[in-house]
Image 1 (cartoon, rainbow, N blue to C red):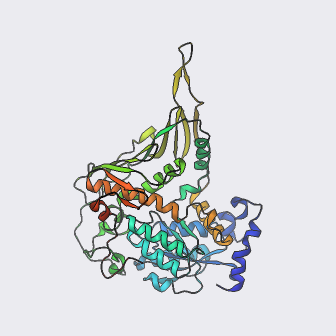
Image 2: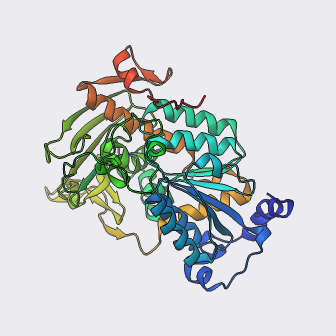
Image 3: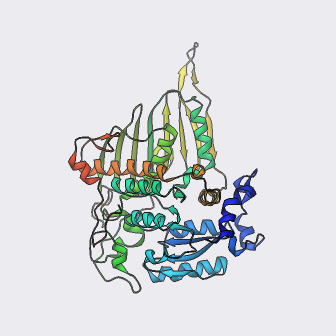
Length: 452
């Protein structure tokens, strides 16, 4: 990074002083129309590792709202994806980013400031640690990992490189209506909250068809795609989006959707680690499809003063309170329900002196979120933190991402064991349970080693 660019990043806080994100950073239309020109030396140069799905969504959120951000490098094991995203960048910004199949080569770029990691989950830890070690800021997709050991490695890495900003892609943290709901909960009007429900019902998810093994598509470096995962024949079911439903690479809906909802639940309740976890479920909707992770699951997390329930189901949309996903905080006086669309208050009732049922607290009808794009706000928050050099303003730093991912991973450990497990928060491990602690470990293959 040149001295002038360093000064730009350091001094940008002055330009933003006294303004909000919405007014300080141009919207997509002004960025696209070129109303604000930014000199080459004042650019933040981004690269993307894993460009197919959320990696590109994250990059696009930066490019369409912030003219000071450029995409100068793309890394993916699939050449067709690289070519598609290169064309997308050229259409948005007019430049052709460099292409890489191996992210380590991309990290050698001296003028690369930040990296977006959108790979399958089993690659997050390696790419994350290597990116920080190379001096890059990191925006990493959630979950940071599907196992507890990698979460702890990533936490230690972020502490070792404190000058690099780290944002985790749990973008609900940038949602203004979540903030409104949180403020209501802190008012105490709900009374004692003894139960929190979190859920994700995914009616759009159909069975994953059983397919024979085959050969990787032309232009795909399949060995690099596997990386530290076990060596297996190529199967289209395990590639791109559907990797989520196989234990080799991810943790199913428990870690995929769970980190979003569990994050909000624990944030609102001021909790981090449970005392115990138990879970039950399985492949109950599509027992004969190709996926491995449970399509139906219920997990009970016991915290100091409340219990949290997680549940997910594929193929149906009939979630709690008529919502396909959300979080419900159930108190003595009423229930706060919040999801991606908005929030509401459902009061409990009591009988007054005349024997008439009345609400304990005032009902609040569903408050819709409005038109804000929270992913864009999350991207803007990341860039603002880079400019100011201030990790304290990040909406979802590495600690937040780790809390959500570790709790979700605990749910999968309890499911795999089929019994209750107990957690020792002081030691950071399951209590007197070698079997559970073994499941918390990362398993690396093909010559790849867990970062130390």
